[in-house]
Amino acid sequence: MAAPLTAVEWGGLFFNDTGASMDVSEPENLEISQANGLSLWLKSPLADSGFYFSGEALYKFKLTFPKGDSPVFEQIADVPLLKVAGDVELGSGLLSLNAGRFYYVDSTAAVLSQTIDGASVKYSLPAVNLGFFLGYTGLLNSLNVPMAGCSPKPEAKIYDLAEPYLPLGVTFEFPSLFANQSLELDAYYIADLTVSENSRCYADLLLSGPITNSVFYNVATSFGFVNFKDLMNYSSFALLFFPTKAITVTAGANFGSADDQGPFVAYSSLAATSMLAANSITPKAAFTYTTDSLYFNVSGNVPFGYDGSKYGISNTLWDFSFMYNIFTDFQVGFTVNTKIDLTGSNDHNFKAKLSAALAF
Image (cartoon, rainbow, N blue to C red; front, side, top):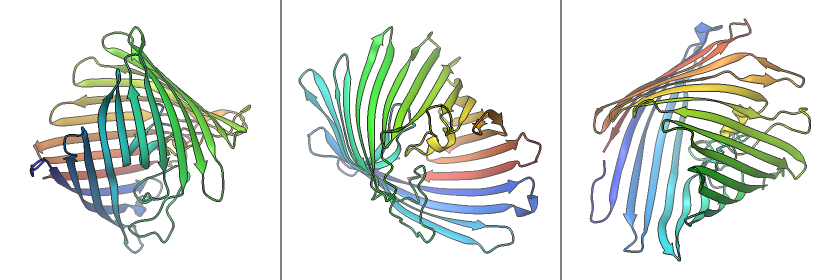
């Protein structure tokens, strides 16, 4: 809900999360957690320029009660959004600009998918969209912005500066290549400014479009090099079926290269999802039901991990989510995350969370 103040829009959100986690092999080690937070947002046009300023501030704390141990108190303060953005007509196309702190994702969502500081420019023409991106991660809060292979310092409190990386990218999108099919080609270079100096470059391809009026597909692949020598690959395929306006059914699979797998090494990037995809082939499926006031989702996957010589299965992961808007500004939700062991060692894990959010 936004409150008008001349041309300024603003609002906020109170949220509450109560969670529990348990390993079936050690049920006595049930862990309870309680988290609360507040976020405030602001959006304002910059005169009649076609540009606007938007920002968001966040504070949240979490209290965890490990079984048989002292409670653990954590708190985070962050500014996840602080940008100037807008569109300008230029020649026969439209020039779009984002500058500041904003969320950025590449076409595969395997290279970059996170909040970042930087700038992105997109020039949209009738037949092709051209894009450029430059970012920096060293000023982000690692406690609130997960990046693959980067962990907050053990002593970190409230705000912890993330590892410094400098991603640079160019994109070429053909929104209607043929028969309403879309093709996007990306190239990224991520300069590693840490002591490890493992800079990486990527070439992405995404092909997507309709098969019928209710069935769509997307095929994505990302080839990368570590320091221009070690080859790696991430690939995914998904079918999306829309039998009704409210229902979406998705099925597909992800592949992430592994060490000692022919010419490949384990796929890695800044995207947290790359850590889950690496060293495995993962079939997946999801069912989603959405209305104006209700959201329900069940999704699952079965990762086949690569051990250096063959693929094998050890567990399956299933997630359940339910959200309901009791009033326009008040929402409640419930999520369950499960890891079911398939090796016979009874290494199951269950997590549950009850959520409530009040917007103003």
